[in-house]
Amino acid sequence: MSTTGISVAAAEFGRDLEQSYATIAALMEQARAAGSQLLVLPEACLGGYLPSLGGGTEDEEARQRRLANLPPALELGGPELRRVRELAGDLVVTLGFCEADGDTRYNAAVTLTGDGILGSYRKVHQPLGENLCYAAGTGFAAFDTPVGRMGMQICYDKAFPEAARALALDGAEIITSLSAWPTARTSPAETLEADRWKQRFDIYDRARATENQVVWVASNQAGTFGSLRFVCSAKIVGPGGEVLADTGTAPGLASARLDVQAELAAIRGGGMYNLRDRRPELYGDVVEANRVAQEVLAHA
Image (tube, rainbow, N blue to C red; front, side):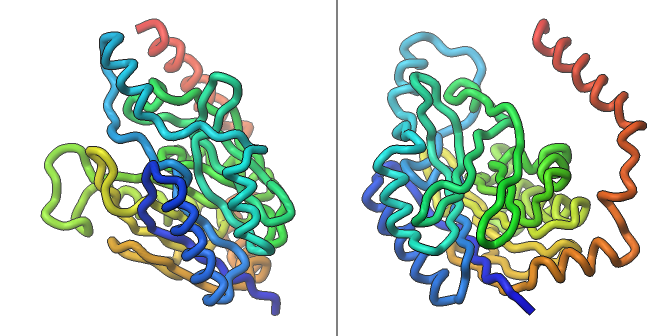
């Protein structure tokens, strides 16, 4: 039996890049001590997330103030990610950052080792005015790694079943979901555990793993940043929907070991053939309805 060690973090990251590198290095050390070959870090590790979400109308002064407070925009081939690669060595690491492509910025994720970048991704689904800061990505693609075929998505993407399904159909065995997922914006709960956005976060994680019969690894930011308070709740979910390891509502590292191929074979051959039994010829109306809805919204 060939097992893979997986670790996933709920950790705090802000604008200070040197502090980010120190936190990443510490988490890598913990992951190696746990015997892990894969470490999944949160969205916006290098330079932190946005200080607030919202949107609506804004004047030019407010727009310039917002743009001046964005995370540092980094290039895939730049020195910042090269430094993370040097720290990673033979550890497979997934992390989030603000990607620069010329003057355009993306909320992005990358999977890398010391040997190079294995895959990159730009967030497709944008919540609550994130489109005021970032351009949207245009697709989902799985890629091969030393720990298996993987796919990536970021935060709000997990609320859309189609995103994870696209990766599963492209052969992803492990899907990493990186987040800066905050508490509810209104009617706050007395505890993080009771927060309705935290509960939504957990439901999505288990649902996406179960319906696609994949190993689902969900990281998250911790602490606070600007007006946001994050729910932590990093977890590893097996292809049957069982939570294998979870940080709960505290910062930390959750780790598990599993034979990915054996787990997938057992679930996918155990009587529920979710991917095989699809009827895509009947789903066209769903896609067409979505296209029409998007056109209506665009002209509203």
